[in-house]
Length: 85
Image 1 (cartoon, rainbow, N blue to C red):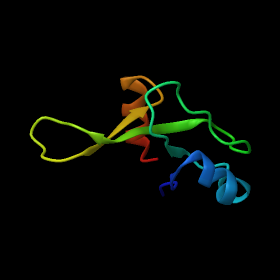
Image 2 (cartoon, rainbow, N blue to C red):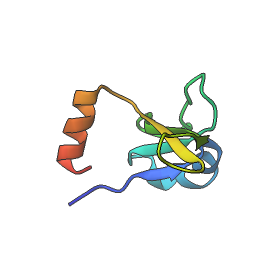
Image 3 (cartoon, helix red, strand yellow):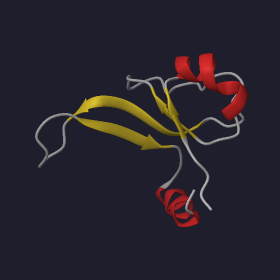
């Protein structure tokens, strides 16, 4: 069984989700490079993924792409992925 992940901006999470979904992993959308986002009050954990841009460029892809960061090391990402969470 896999646990859902919440994808939202900080403002949306705080206004609509924090009371019911604070215990879920959060993929935060905050379009800036620095500083890293502070997750909304009420969340048990900080963000797990951070989408910092939706206008990124990647070789081999025409048009804009999302750019994201995982809050951890490569090894932690592999462990997270293997757990299926």
